[in-house]
Image (tube, rainbow, N blue to C red):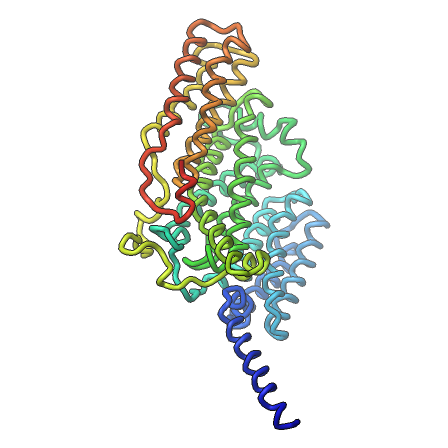
Length: 458
């Protein structure tokens, strides 16, 4: 019996070792091991915690809530970094990332009375997230980087660079407007609409938010930029969970922000130059990030077809052999270079024409002197036309352009439905509407390949 048991034990041990070996090859496992391999990061986080504990006394917060928030948060940061170092607990390091998020929110929640408190917590929060999560997730992962059937890699540093740059622009603009809402400055510059930005920041719409809505925008933009830095060039397959959250923050939540901006002339009665610029940048962020989300979705579909649960694939990702990567002799080099920043984006002339018509609709109430519902319709529809045309420059999202066709039909009918309208305004609507329908029918040239997603590019 004893002799007979040894083969079974050896077999079980071998199976266990093989299982462990396979598990070590999961990208998600590497995410858990890496915090324990970079101890210097935790010492930097501890230093940030000490900075937080001592900041209220040296910076003069003038707020009991902010003072205690920073002292307690600093101690939590130190404790979680210590757990990572001395208890080999990788989850503690990732938990510090959420502490960093709280630091970004705390000045808004407690309405920090001084700019020093707001800027200090924002900067330290970004640094805590950077050290606790971002740096650790920059490690190179094994396996191919170009999705199967794709002509390029949507996760290279070059691909993410414009997204990060646009996120930083939005962060600085939003922080500037938040400084006004929090009372640190008395005026906000607007080159085209006079005090339009001030009117919007003081409007009932902004006051309906429990905290500064511009401050919330700054937090969102900061997270988008930080998430753009996370992971290596294979993150579409090694970190599906992160690409999913990134896609949610940028695409649906970003578009909600755009809708809030384009509704300003209807709800408040004026435009805001800085808001329009940040919204226009957000539209390009949506277009630039769409391809990576599609690649991640294809990875999850492939993994589930292999018998892996969606939950496991979502958190652990998957590997891809070099034989299955890209397209033979047609794959672009994933070496980072300026041209690689805009792979997956093409701007055919008809989409440029649609954008121009959208801008014209936004200006037409001023040109023709229309008012009331017809003016509101022109403002809203024009901004939506621009939004859908910009997003449709992403080749995987080219079908979005079809949403402009019913908008074009509405532009034709609006002067008669919402009128009366000046004759020139009515005929302008007819011409613009017909052109919008015509310009949003053709698909145009698609330069790159996107695996099975190609059939959805119509």
